[in-house]
Length: 55
Image (cartoon, rainbow, N blue to C red; front, side):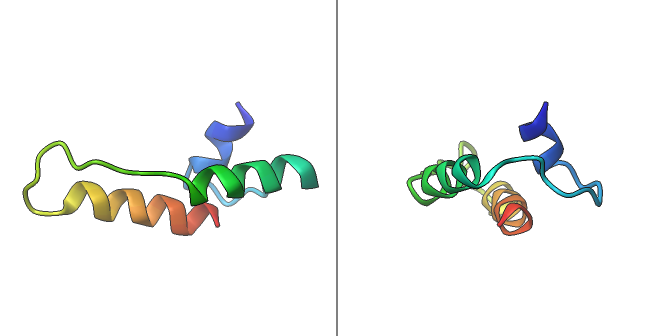
């Protein structure tokens, strides 16, 4: 549930401690995204917006 809150567009602060935050950042740094449609680029841009919001 905390991760869902982190990825939502609500204006709430995250509920992760420092160690969990570092783990999430490390996971995001290793993240690879594949655009299944290979079309307009809307999917990767949406993913980028989510990641920027989280970070």
